Length: 253
Image 1: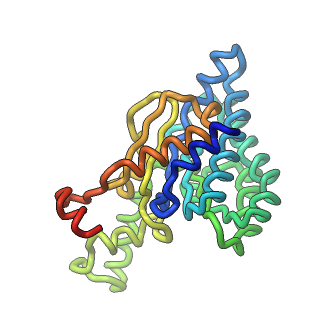
Image 2 (image 1 turned 90 degrees about the horizontal axis):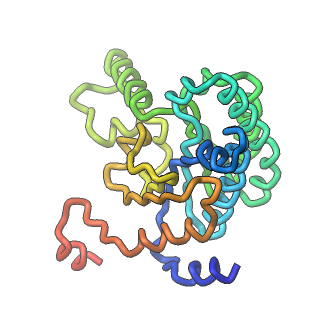
């Protein structure tokens, strides 16, 4: 607790990332290292989700987006997929009262029509129950991939052009972003990936064009508030130039 507080004291509250996205990787390896079934890693990973949500809310971060299940994950062994879908639904249902208590709004993005009805219904109930919350928006990316999202956006834009809602000459970065699943939130300022792999894995490819990337070897079930604070501290030590020179950034600030 003292270690966490020392790290929290280092965070500049005036320079927090408004939106943090996390690739939660390493649940299966965490379980394997302990001789447990992979599903036990997913169970333990839920605790890390709670910790990340709590710290985000306590600090006043506006958006937390978690990569919970990719479209590629449907190719995993059916037993693991079934267990994970059940766990996600159960965990969110159990956490709903605390989300409401902490003024956290649950948001869902992805090809949700592929999800089992039981898990989908539980998630939707939580989304509706927290719709009035005005604090942290916690988004779960489920049955999600960035390529899927971009293709879906292109289809919607094509339909809008065909119907005359927009002209092809209207299409620019801002218009395109309005057709993405994340249209109601700002792009991530900070992307964290746990588990040791230094890749993006088809996650928010459009949105992270200028995000700061933080990779850690820590497996997701071991990723607690202290390391989350480390990621924010490192983020605040970086200069975000958006294509400009350091001199321009310093003059503007």
